[in-house]
Amino acid sequence: MDAVRTPDERFAGLPGYPFPPHYVDVADGDGDGGMLRVHHLDEGARDAPLVLLMHGEPSWSYLYRTMIPVLVDGGLRCVAPDLVGFGRSDKPTRRDAYTYARHVEWMRAALFDGLDLHDVTLVGQDWGGLIGLRLVGEHPDRFARVIAANTFLPIGDRPPSDAFLAWQQFSQETPEFPVGRIVNGGTTSTLSGAVIAAYDAPFPDERSKAGARQFPLLVPTRPDDPASDANRRAWETLHAWTKPFLTAFSDQDPITRGGDHAFQRDVPGCSGQPHTTIEGAGHFLQEDKGEELARVIVDWIATL
Image (cartoon, rainbow, N blue to C red; front, side):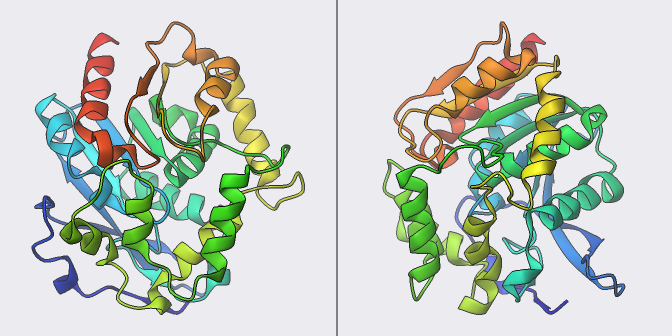
């Protein structure tokens, strides 16, 4: 599988991101013995309760930079991977290399085979939830609890929203895929030029953005989507999930609005939990209200 690796110097001196890199190798899925390098952050005491921070489209672990210090100060260990195609992880250059199933398998191999994570608290936002909740559905014994934040697990049984269709169309038609500006457009705050540049850092050219370009097409939007059956099976697990499950959606995200109520209705583990709405935050609530979201996580875990 043809892949590129972003030069390390592009990650030097990024504002608010002092964390050392860690890597594991996973099979690329082509069946030819090829490997991909997956990057992750690992902060906090190794014997502390583990929080898995999963980013989505088109961000990377930089999204969690303001949350990690709060979580670590709260006595937690944070593992924040970069999905394949993003951040410091390797980036296959062919768009057809990216499938929903491969993203799930790449993360399973990295987090369970490579890092052997157990008793995980998943924090999933955007595609971090689409992938993370699949892992919960397929490997429930690895997880202790779940926090869903501006995410969903679609099976293609309902038409996508106008907001999603507009995003999907833009992602395929724009001549240049402006990662940093996309993140900025998904916040209620205005990001600095340096922060926008940090989101652009993993992507030196359009060739490195194949995964980001492909993600919007991988969301199941019809019942016969290639990922719909696997997501239905994951929902079977979630429908029986009695471990703690918390929703922490923002109030200004047109893409996932209302998704928290679906989880609260359909996941038994949501019953009796202190679900919250992060006010004044957009789709990328980690940017707008990262420290607030981190305190919600710390306080919730402390009560369990």
